[in-house]
Length: 343
Ligand code: AMP
Ligand code: TRP
Image 1 (cartoon, rainbow, N blue to C red):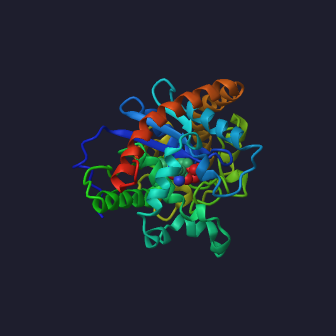
Image 2: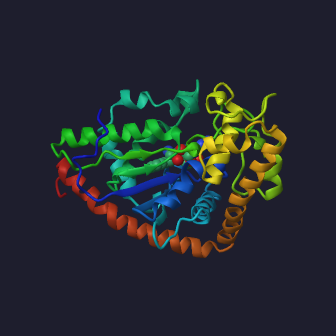
Image 3: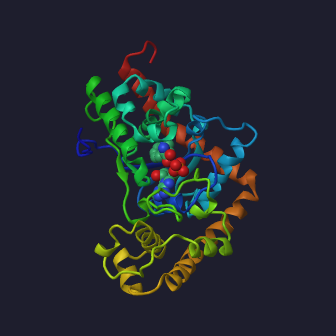
């Protein structure tokens, strides 16, 4: 299906979300949070902590609210300004669940069956997974389209989910004869941070669920931990090459070069130009400096935000009310379009 947004004439709006499950890592920061902060200067931005997605896998009721505050603190520490962007938790805005049901009736099971993230997550145990985990990407489409968001900053692993959102928007518009009602949201996936790989295995994504803590840099790691993990990162027997072509087939090195580029805000080519021929010892030392310089202020700010949970709650509640003011009329229009009595 097409991904054009050319016929949609509504305002440009950014929406994205992160699940409140487990500690955030460098992949989340470079793939998502860093872009969140940059975009708020140019467009209206809505950033959600997707607690409804989190419960597709059982979450301890005693810790869920704190996990949500933890992600909120990470957003703010990464530079998201609550005076510019909305930061709220998904379950506080009913429009998400309501629109998700309507979209469950628009999306085809064949589309959802193709989602590789579900298949990767459940492996051979699909029958034991919650129905919510299966329709997870339909809820994601509802998140985005409840705000008629046009742009969605995410890491590369979300590309397929975004395609599904576009297909749902298009089918809704077609089925109900409302050609430009929903925009076809565009993913914003670019730059070397879009797919950060494990420090222990450059062919695997850096992930919260990797049992090895050495595989990732957590947003809560201190300078020593960051430097140690980078020093121990997997490399090969060569040295730093001079050209991008020579990075092919060397996923561990390509990953370190990509991380360096994303953190230092330079191109991968420039990283190579600066370090070509260097052995990995000194290259890793330089990378550790860049990483600590970029991450230490975030770690520090995050703990300051977390020290005042009441203030975080005030920010989340206020933004939740504002988010509902935007989404409720859109979902009310959807009800009318579907043709419910009383809508
Ligand atoms: P998650 O932690 O899976 O909820 O992901 C939150 C955001 O971080 C999404 O936009 C993901 O695409 C992004 N993300 C997660 N892991 C990575 C990674 N290894 N590299 C780049 N982006 C990532
Ligand atoms: N599925 C996304 C992830 O795991 C999180 C998410 C939920 C999201 N709803 C969203 C991302 C809407 C972007 C837009 O990372």
